[in-house]
Image (cartoon, rainbow, N blue to C red; front, side, top):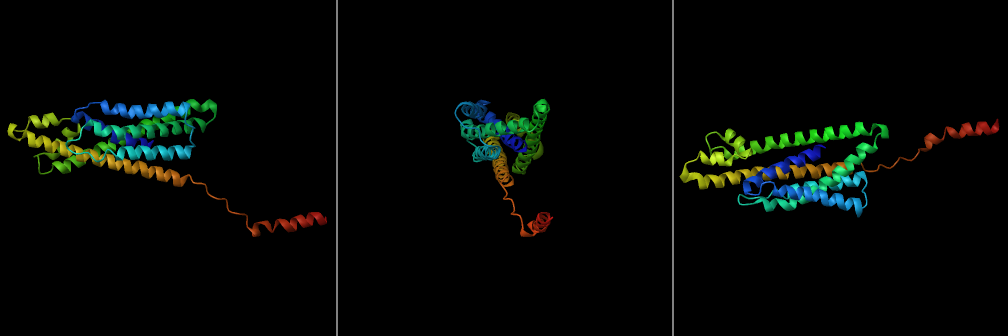
Length: 240
């Protein structure tokens, strides 16, 4: 759930960027569409993957999709986010399917409700934690970028991260608004790229950890020393 929260945090940053770029909410349709496409395909055509394979592949696809959103420029619009969000949606759909199946399948049937509630609780905690962490990262990145550009970079970063670019522009002299608007787009794109690349790296790292931690360990062969005490005992029983 932590990896899901981190990915969701980056996707929320992408949604805010799309609103500033002129496509409010349209790009998030790609995220939902990716999840729906996988859900429909998995229920009819695709074989159900093992928990190890499903979690690894899902986190990798989600991380790869988020990371592809980390190369935006000041002039990028919401269409630049569609491909990454669609790929992330497929990956998240795969992770959700495996996580829910593990949560419900790891307890007796009479405790399925308790397992489902625990799953939903930790899912929401992951979202909240991811959004909070990446929101803080976005504001701190904007604060550094605006340092020396505006008198109060911390307040400006808070306003910009909340979609208040128009408020900042309204307080700027008319002759400087065009240049300052370009600066704000550049600052926001830099913060968004930082979020996306960080979230992508974390999700892909999580996929690698799942693959490594759940690997099959060979059972060590029984040593000859362990077998030797049994032989005299067996001989004594035969002799008796």
